[in-house]
Length: 64
Image (cartoon, rainbow, N blue to C red; front, side, top):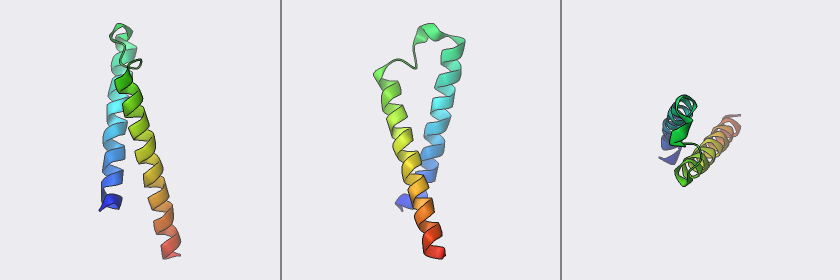
């Protein structure tokens, strides 16, 4: 189940980060990329992406 969830979580977090980046570049006074929420989202994105990559590599190795 977690292997099915990780890619979706990575996509959702990536889209959220992209939206925050675009909004922050348009209006930097809002400070989306400076607060603790950004750090939390960035950490979640890193963990989800790393877990997705590890699961993908493990799946490939098991099929080889």
